[in-house]
Image (cartoon, rainbow over all chains, first blue to last red; front, side, top):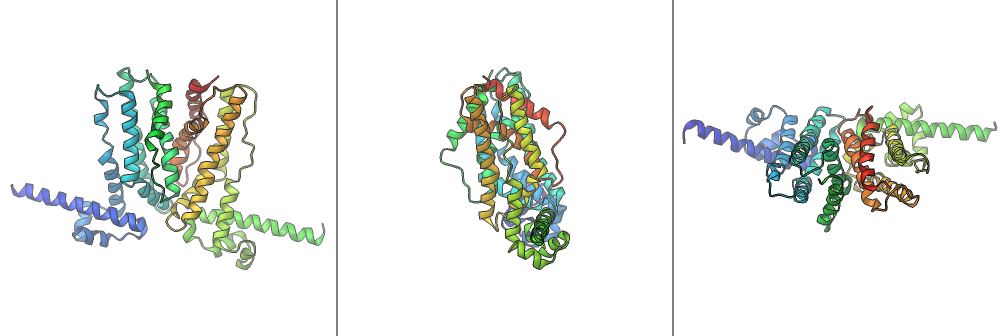
Length: 204
Length: 202
C-alpha cells in the first residue's frame, strides 16, 4: 500500500469514527447541548481533526442524517424486471420503517424539530436531506414504473406523497409524540393494507 | 354594568391576553426557555395575576394547547352539491383552522419536549393525530351512509386523505417556524380528493 492510500484509509477511518461518536452524543444530548470536544474525544481524534472533516457542528449533524438515510435508502435494486409492483411497494415501506425506527431517524428528527426556531438552517438542511431526497427518489422510481407499464400514468409527485403520507400516518406521527412507541406486531399487515389501496388506484 | 360584571369582564380579558402572550412566547422560545415574567409583561399583567389565572407554566402551556386544538365542530360534512367539493372544503377548513391556530408550530414545541414531558406529548399526539383521524373517518362514514361514497374501510380512507395533507403541508411546517399554507394548497388537496374518489366515489 502506497503512502497516499495509507493516508486515505486513515482519513476514512477517522471520518467514520467521528460520525459514529457524533451520532451517539447527539442522540443522547440533543443538538444544542452536544459538545464537539466530547465527540472528538470519543472518536479518538483532536478537535482540529474533527473540524477538518466537518466545518461546523451543523455540518456534522447534517452528515449523520444523510448517513442514516443513505445506508438503507438505496432503491437501485428495486427496479429489476422480475420484481412485481406489490413487492416493490413492500420493499419501499419496509425500507422506510427500518430507516425511521432501526436507524433512529425518528429520534434524529425530534432533535431537529426541537432546534427549528434557534437553528433554522439545520432544520432546512435536514428536511432536504431526509424528506426531499426520499421524495425525489420515490418520484424517480414511480416514473420508471410508469414508463415500463407497471404503473398507470399518474401525477407521480402526488402518488409518492400519498404512499409516504399513509405510512407516516400509521407509524411515524405517533412515534414523533412518543419516544417509547415501537412498531406494532401487525406492521406487515398494515403495510399490506396500505399497499392494497395504493395498487387499486395505481396498478396498470 | 354592575361592579361584578365589570370585574368578570376585566378578568376574562386578562385571561385571554395571558393566553395569547403565552402562546407567542412559547412559540418563540420553546417551553423550557420561556420565562413566565416575559409572558406576564407581554400580557400587561403582574406575575402574581398570571399565577392567579394559571398555577404554573405547565398549566398555562396546557391551556394554550387546549385552545389550539379544541376545534369548534363546524367541520362537519353536510349533504349538498358535489361530493368532490364537499371533501375538498372539509379538508381545507381543517387545514386553514390548524394554521390559523398555529397548530403546526405548537406541535414543534411539544415534540421538542418529548424527552422531558413524555405524557403531555402523548396527550397532544392523541388530540392532534387521533382526534383528527377519527373526525375524518366519521365524516367519510356519513358520506357512505348518504350514498355519496362506496362503502370502504374509512380508517384507511382517513389515512389516505390525512396522510397526503400532512405530508404536503404539516410535515414541512415542523421544520420551518414560518411556514404557512401555500397558495396552491387547494389545488393539491383537490388532486388528492380526485384520486381518492376514483377509488371510492359512488
